[in-house]
Length: 246
Image 1: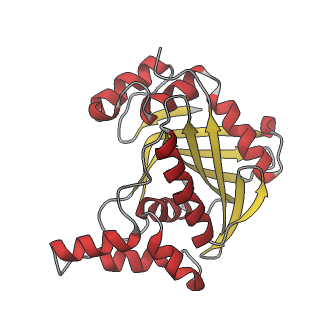
Image 2: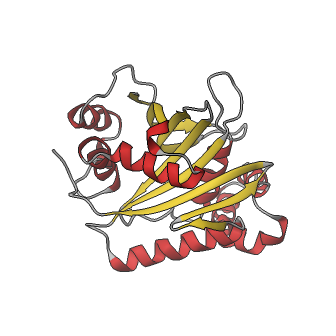
């Protein structure tokens, strides 16, 4: 398994490596008890990758020992249209099963940070108010195609970040430029330093997202939907861990 930060050459083998590279790239985001540091700690010091394989294995009905994580990109970017600003996954993970099925996992880490500051509706209005020639409405029209037509009211009210996360997961391709066999969007919520009110707001936003994309429950904390002729698996896990560091 290779772990690297997006566009950085250094390979990451330890928590200290992760901290050093991340703090160079995004120093303001590396804070004790916040999502970036909590994610690194969980993955590198609390067997996070094995836990992740367990979550994925349950979703695709494959023993975790038959899943190999091959490449992990921190802040991995996936373009989903021709406009600027690709989707940045906290982790973009490429994996493969023993039966040679390919898996892409887009991970979003949270403590109690919101799913972005604006809903779809708010983001469109804000962009137009700033610039009547904004390309944001066209981008939103593209994002809308990932959601059922009869769910437009829910789509308009959902958080913009969750729409780009959906598109940025389903547009991932293998090194051979082919589709993956499984597409998974995973939200990991680190609950130790979580503000109860903010967490409730995130839960409500996530439930609205599930409704907007017409997701059906597969098993506990795991859902499935059809989007743009692909199947998307959505996993939402609360993680209780010792936060913050070394």
